[in-house]
Each structure stands twice: as C-alpha cells, then as structure tokens.
Length: 395
Figure 1 (cartoon, one colour):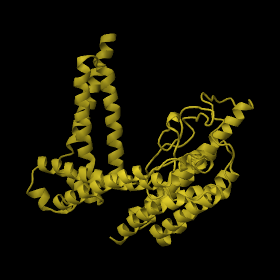
Figure 2: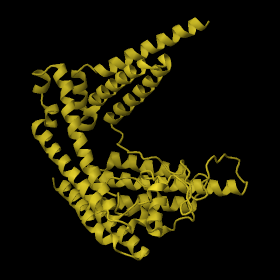
Figure 3: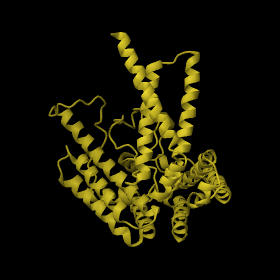
Figure 4: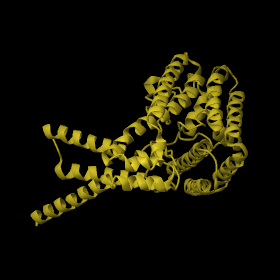
C-alpha cells in the first residue's frame, strides 16, 4: 500500500510541476531540471535498488561510446536484456521498481539502435556499405549524444514511471524546437485527468464487487461450474483494463502538461516516434531507426503461456485467412468470427495478468480443462488436413 502511495503521488507531483518546467526558457537548465526530477523519482520508487539503474545506464554508455557502431545495438540489447533477466530472478521488490528499469532499458537500447542506424546511413552515403538503405536516415542522429546527454535521456522524468516510450530524436527536438511552448496544453491534461478519475471509479467498483482473491479460494473451484469460472475472467479483464488506463492517463498527462513531444499537425507525428512527413523544418525519419516498444514482463510461466498462445492464434488466424480468402459478404462473417475468437482469447488469458502465483494459475486452467488451447489444437489439426487435401488436389 505504501508503495502505491509513493508511486501515484510521484506521478501527481510530476504533473503539477509540468507547468513550471514548461516556463523554463534555457534549454540546458530545462534538461537538467527534468533529469534531476527523474532521478529523484527513481530514488523514491526504487529505494536502495537505485544502484541497478546506474549499472544499466553506465553499462550502455560504455557500449555506445566504446563499441563498434556496426554492432552496438546487438551488444546493448544483449547486455540490457540479460541484466533485466537478472533483476527478474533476483530483485525482490514491487512492480513499480521493475517498471522504472524496463522504461530505462527501452530508452537505452532504442538509443543504441539509433546510433547504429546513423552509422549505417553515414557509411551508405560514403559508399562504404553494401547494405541497402531504402529510406533516407541521414537525419536520425545529427551528432552522437554525449555522456551527459545519455544520462539525462535515461532519467528524464517524462515517461519514466511506465512509458510511453519515445526515441532520442523526440527528446532532442524538445529542447531545440519551439513547438512545446506554443499553445495551452492544460485542456488536454484536464481531459486525461478526468478520464483517469472515471477509470479509478470503475477500478474500485470492480475490485469491490469482483475480487481477484477468489482465484485463491478453494470454494471457487468446488461451488462454481466451469462456465462461471471462465466468465468470471470478464470482470477481471475489465478491472485490469481500468488499472492500465489509470496509469496510462497519468503518465501521458505528465507529457502534455510539460508540452513534451509536440509537433505541428501537418508533420503527421507518430506516438513515440516523431514526425512522419518531410518538411523544410523537419526531415524524414527512417521507420526502422529505433527499437519498437516492448514490455519485458519477466520469465514467468504466465508470460510463456500468454505469448505462446497469442503467437499460435495470430498465425492460425492468418492461415485460415489464406485458406479461405473471404471476400464480399463472406468477409464480414469471417471478420465477426475472428473478433469473437479474439475476445474469447483475451478473456481466457486474463488470469495470466491477474494471478501471480503459478500454482494457483495452473489450478485455475486445470479447472476449466484448458478449453481454449483444446480449441486452438483442433483448429490446427483442421488447417493441416485442409492444406493436405488441397495439395492432393493439385497433384
């Protein structure tokens, strides 16, 4: 409970300081203020575990500054993801501490990818590289970030709590462009905070009415049928939805209140990416110059089941689309069928988000006979048979 208070209080403090931060005119002072506030937030949330963030940051600084730029992104992701793996096995702390480390890891690895892409672009322009560069990326990094730049980017308070991820270019443009100071973004922040209040109300109502602790109660598996146990996931899915959107609204409110990541509408900016259209004051970005947003959930059985099931379902849906190639009026029917399957998949996988105890999670899925996995297995067998029949007909 204390950790929850610290986490959400720090979020509200960052939102309230956004207006003051926005008024700072000197870009260097502004950057140092944002990095200092982020470091303070990290210290409050991580406590004595703050030294892990130092190892993450300085390890990547050494990699980016000293390693061959052709392989810097590979070395960075190997080091950072290995360190995160170590934290998941050895760090006994709250999820909020892990969120801080995950956010910083994404920024650092993403920066390494941008450095690599900038180096590839320079080599391509000089004719020293045989690799293809289908999109001009000469503007990815105008200059390599200094050590202080990397530290400031890693600890910058906007998005530090749990995203959203933004690449180095957005961070750099924030201090070199005037767009963040134009207009009043308080209206957008107020709208986000109102949504956060509504999500909080929904979360509290669902928590009071449908407690997740029922999964740990033996009576749940004795007094209720399989259908009830499966459908109970709907309430937990809604509760999880409200919880995620509370954090999302508060985290993005920090950015809007500070005027961060603002570009003219005609640049067609993409979230976390920046402008996607070339104009005289902004250059075209390479769509492959940064690491896509990834959440490192942790090496738990819940996440293995979650990722494996989703991977199988996505490929299975693609396979059936190729087999039948629905068009016209039949396309609507297939789309409805796929939507229903996706919904059932989401409901079925909800315990992977909610139940932290692996034993209880397995007990739950045993109680509903792993029904969705059986359906997927049946669909795989049917797809194999149909493919084999089509091949026989071709012969």
